[in-house]
Image (tube, rainbow, N blue to C red; front, side, top):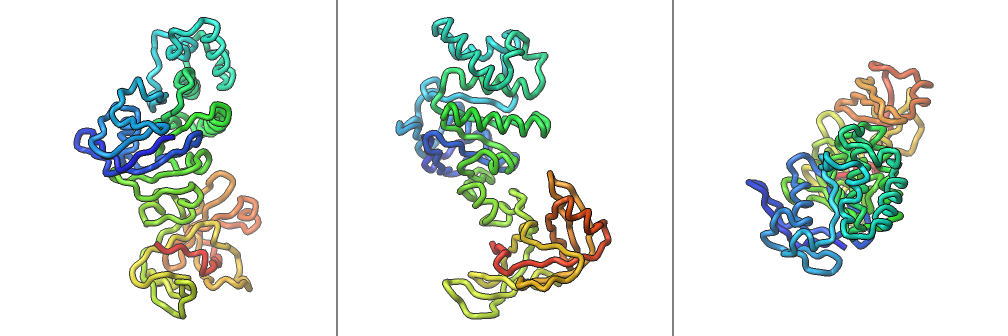
Length: 351
């Protein structure tokens, strides 16, 4: 278990501001945020490399706020890997096992190398490894002593997208087998969606939202979180009531420039609307649907994202819908094509 209670830590002119978060034993949590948000400072405070000015750090039920790094039982994988250049891959992995019997060391090195697919590289120098092989070696070295806690600092930052996806899968398998309590920092929300049990969003050294990754993605609590997580189109506007309240929510209009949407709201006045691409139904003709909002306009941009196309339509303001490549081909969509967008009032998330 990792628990921070109102932790303040400072590096140079930057400070974490009363950060509170918890990673239950055996879970994999992520901290996400833009560059300069305090992610690495947070890991350094947990690892003991940056002093905690106030607040409390608990590691598996023990107050570790003032414990020296070597007594915290933590393995760390740095963004730059920091492999020992004068040692082979196998010797790097075995580094944390010094003092153990030779047979036990060799068995643990072989086990991790097999799990991570680097057995063939055990006698090579780190200098000749690819980025993915270096990352696997760094991960194996951190796990070799069986730490109770693993800290990962942007572990996929220096690898290509295909290697990133492969490393994600391998990390999932490793976590399931080793059961190590893991805290990973990243600027990529896809990591949180694929790996995390929980996610904490940092901005300017402060926690701005916490929760299960899907919940944070689906229900961002601010325009900043919505933009950072790529939750969809984010529009600034005004909410005005159009009906009576039920369970604290009421029918309303959300107006953003020339666009007026039917929404369900819980407050009046200035707000931001978050509209996820998959909630927008795109068609080449008006649909007879129960959705309250129907909009019309030309396509201004088509982008591919994995197996889907992100299609931005000018309906007075730009809105981005998602569509499978096969569906898009059937509609013969190109920039300039007029299309219709349909959206349920309940699908508009107001923050």
